[in-house]
Image 1 (cartoon, rainbow, N blue to C red):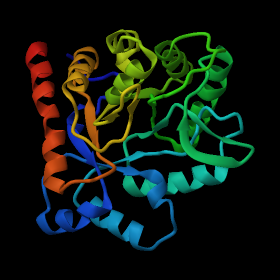
Image 2: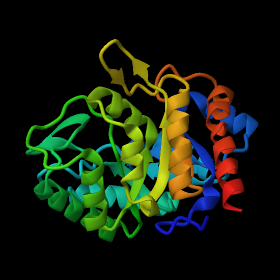
Image 3: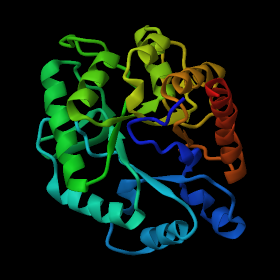
Image 4: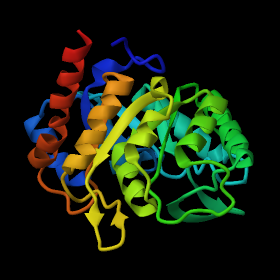
Length: 282
């Protein structure tokens, strides 16, 4: 299968999130890791320990930036001061792409600090795509938007979530950070077939994939990133690779964080599915 035509970063393999509890292990043991994903907002500062630690990581590892506060779906204009800080970090890390979420989370300058689901309307898609384009042009680096897990839906929606995602990325001419765990979580919460979702997005725009664990309750699933990946999510991951080809993959583990080796071992399980995809493509 040819390289993904959106970014062609097929050599990035499998990464894990850079987390403070693992710093000591990383600096002392220097483990072999394909790349680390950082939360951009944790390092958008002028100096101090965060940047000191980041620079030490950059001496040895590739880093990809992932944001949590661009809120492309919010109605207000892009925050230029935020973009200036983000661009300084982009230049520092030399990240090959920047990702953030397809969501909203702010109103009139007030921030919820949450990834809120959007109404799936053509008007919302138009506004969101314009903000993504503006961000991409300012940062001068490709943008990938992530599908979020959701727990509520809007009655005004005019299309499905996967149709909305497609509408946005086609209008914005950007990539997708495909979170297969989020698809699974939302499919359970909203009673749809997750494979229908996967089969109806533009696979050629999948720039990166997230895998993660979650918490299941009696009536809903919560995207907690504090468990290993379950078999149904691995099956979705395998299907995503069939559609998109070999794609940079990141394991998220953000709460009740185990040892570095445990997290890394869980992430490397993805290689089995990547190798299967490559074998079929030969």
